Every structure is written in structure tokens, then in C-alpha cells.
Amino acid sequence: MASISTLGVGSGLDLSTILDNLTTAEKASLKPITTQQSAYTAKLSAYGTLSSALTAFQTANTALNSADLFSATTATSTSSTAFSATTSTGAIAGKYNISVTQLAQAQTLTSGIQTSNTTALGSSDASRTLSIKLADGTSKDITLTSDQTSLTGMRDAINGAGAGVSASIIKVADGEYRLSLTASKTGEANAVSSVTVTGDDTLQGIVGFDATKSDADNPLDLSVKAQDAELTVNNVAITSSTNTISDALEGITLNLSDVTSGNQSLTITQDSSKASTAISNFVDAYNNLLDQFNALTKYTAVDTGSDTQDSSNGALLGDSTLRSIQTQIKSLLTNNTSSSAYKTLAQIGVTSDPTTGELTLDADKLKTELTKDPTGIKEMIVGDGKTTGITTKLATNLTSWLSSTGSIQSAKDGVSKTLNTLTEQYNSTNTRINNLIARYKAQFTQLDVTMNSLNSTSDYLTQQFENMTSSSSK
Image: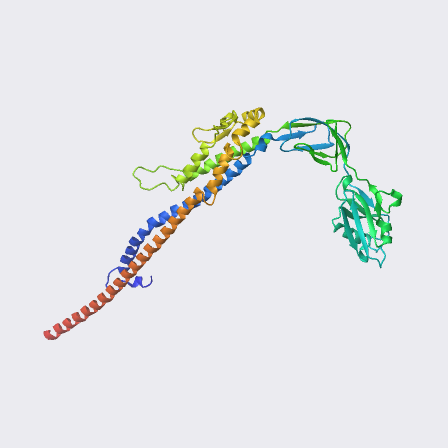
């Protein structure tokens, strides 16, 4: 721009200002393009906001779209701390009498006292195999080197073999150590039936075990006997290898922690709290979605005669994609084809404000209806989980709208295409303007040169005439 500042020196005209004014006038033709670019960029961002809002609503809808919510139960034991229970799908509300007479426990075998936990105990020249066999018939062979016959060596070899037992060392006193083998699982079937060392009689005499022999004949002592849990449910005897019993009562898992003194009660009741929470979260999510719709389509009236919109208007004001989605969601909040008595959310305490469209939840009415007929409400809300039900249909539509080929992505693709066209239009217009201004500048520069030459000639001629006049007067 330094050369422009010298324009007009030769002509005496303010060509620099004229050129600046011409540039400003020409650049004004770019403003409508940049205004459209800003509007479409805001629209593209708004579609991203719309997608995020729909995704948040989809999360709440997915949580509610579960038949298990409406058959949920809870377990309470009012007379015992010896056991607890959890319920899942299929649990039947009712009362059970439970008596626990024995807990399941894992077998533990312990070696005799050794004076060191690191000194090799086996024969130095032997090649040996430690075999561990369980009562269920499974077995594991572990090859031991001479360096692995210490208590520590055997512990590490056993723990690394996956033999169904865990090994540890117990320090009884200074210079007194025992090797302890505990079955990995509780129950009689998971107990060790034999520990045999072949190829090393010395080591066999330290860690050998045979469940068919008496304690006096076994190097390993039976410290803890393996046993199954024993209990009765409504006077029906049950045994289990674990203290967690999930297959005795349908939909109920018992967790035993102690024996009982006689029968203790377990009550299974209908639990509507999960469904209530999911419905409440759905209402909140819908209202949040509605707030986003309103923000994205906000309209502020302008003075009569103004040809511009208010700058605070939503980027998707009048957008057909958003309007279509909003209309469809509202229409899906009822299920007139439900096979139950429930057709509308208002029947369970979820009503819509006629002015704002926001949902309001009557928690007391919802609780009453869920207690009265949870299956009927499930039929209205979830339906068959495939094609019927409020949340099922919403889920199908939400997945479609948010997919890579859905209406939102299509709208975004259209906006991106328009933005690309506007960018090309801006660049071509800006190039035309720059070329025009460069031509003006060249012409003005030439005008300066020409005017400067004419002025120089004029000055010369004037001087010559003055000289001629002066000579003639003498």
C-alpha cells in the first residue's frame, strides 16, 4: 500500500483516497457472501448441538426401554443376617423360609514344620513330578527341579501351574515354616484327593497326601475339611459347593454368610423404584431436549419495515429437519395400539403442558399405577421391544435420525455443500475485485505520469514565453 500513498503527486488529484473509496465500494459486494457463510456455519454447528441433544435423550430412552424394569423385585430378610439375597428377571414375589445348617468351605492341607523355607528338601539327584488331583477327577502334573523342592520353590511352582489350589508359606515361629495348600474353590468336589511326588521319595514324605488314608498316614495334615453348603428352602433340602447359590430359586441369588438357628424368613416384593427412576429420567431428558429445540428455533420479532432478522434468533429457525423430528417425537409419546388399558403417559401421571409442551411427572400417581399394573404399563411403554411401544418406536427413530445416512447428516451434508459453493463464490469475487483495483491503480499511476509530464511541458513553455516576452520588451 506504500505506492498508493504516492498517488496524486504528479496530477495533483487525491487519487489515493479515490482508490480507497473504490476498493471499499467493490469489497461491499463480499458482505452478502460472508453473511451467508456465517449463517450456514452457525447452522452446521447447530446440527451438531441437535445431534448431541438427541443422543442424550436416546440414553434416557434406552434405559426406559427395558421390560425388566417393570418386573423388578427386591429381597429383604427381616429376621436374619446369616444370608442376603439379590433378585433378577424371573424372581417371583413371595415369602420363603430358609434354614442354613452348614456353610461351604475350601479344603486346606498343611505340611509338617520345616526349619527353612528356602532350603531344598528333595533328593539332589532326582527328577521328580508333583501331581495334584482333585475330587472332581481333574489333575495337574508339575515338574520340579532340585532348586524347586524348597517350600518357597514348591509354592511358586504350584501357584504358577493352575492346579486348582493356591500355595502359601506359614511362619509358625523363628525357624519353623509350613507349606499350606488351599483349594481354589469351596465344596467337596473341589477338594484335593491326592498329592503325589514321583521320582523323589524324600519329597513324597513331606508333601504326600491321599484322601483315602488316615491323617496319621499322610505327610500333609488336613487342616480344614472341604464341605458343601447345606440349607433348606421351605423345608426342601439343598446342597451347594459355594455359598453363593444362584440356581436353586428362579431369579434369586442367595449369599450365605453364617448358619441360622431354625427357619428365617426371606421376602421378595415388587420393586417399582427402578421403573419410577427411569421414567423420571425420561421426563427430564425430554424437557432438556425441548429446551434445545426452543433455543435452536428461537425467534425475536423485529420492527416493522426492517429487512433483517434479530441476531439472537436460533440458527435452525424454520428448519424443516428439526421441525420434522420434533413433531414425530411428540406424536410417539402415546401408544393407542397398546393391548393394555394404558394408552397415554397421562394415565400414569406424566402430563404435557399445553403451552410449553414440557412434561410434568406426578410421582405419587406413577407409584400407584406401577403398583397396580406394572405389566400393563410395560406394554404401553416398551411393547414387544421390536416394533411396538413408545420407547421402542422412539429408539428406532432416534437410531435412524442419528445414523450416518439419517436426516441430520443429510442436512449437514447439504449445508457443507452450500458452504463450499459460498467459499468458491467468495474467492472468485475477491479475485475479480483485486484485479479490478490493481487495474485502477495502474491507470491512476499512468495518469500521474502523464499529468506530471504535461505539467512539466506546461512549465517549460510558460518559461519560454516569459523569456520571449522579456526579450521583446527590451
